[in-house]
Length: 247
Image (cartoon, rainbow, N blue to C red; front, top):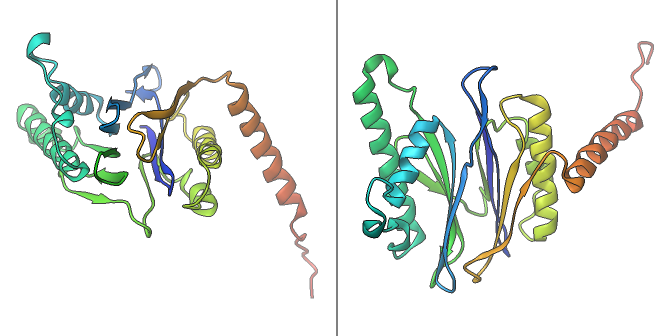
């Protein structure tokens, strides 16, 4: 399992993903699930993945054509004209990769190799855009009504984002909100874990405005985690008491 969030703001995009992958409680590993490509002044495109690791790595490998010699490789995402075309390309690769895995492994394995992907970024001449790609290859785009997407283990962190999100919020507040969302998810589900990858994309800049990996000993993350826990306890105790003898 994993947890990834892409958030659309007036100022640009904020993306965060965990790095934990596991095939059982005794086989836990760290794998990057956020992949970013940029051409300064022209485009920046980021992909976050959730689901079967072999499937998602297959999609990334096809994007970068890792099966070819270095001199013959070209990244297909750097050739599309719009973010819609980027989402279409990734959707097709995901659908074809899942279909090939199901065909190779038989009907009993059908559904085992499923995955979902968030595509985010901006290409010069267009606006920052955010897409959610389904295993079937089709996708939806973020809008004023649906300004953020989650993939993976979404249920624990979603209420935090719904209550705290504001399209006009600063990048700093958006990062703080995602920190709380991820902390709540990590505490509730062992299949999601640190380190976390963070990327901020400012509108019309076409390169990362802020990018870093957040480890378990990160002082800001630890302060947010402890502060949120304490704030919840204080809020709980501030609520009216329930009485068995009320009127």
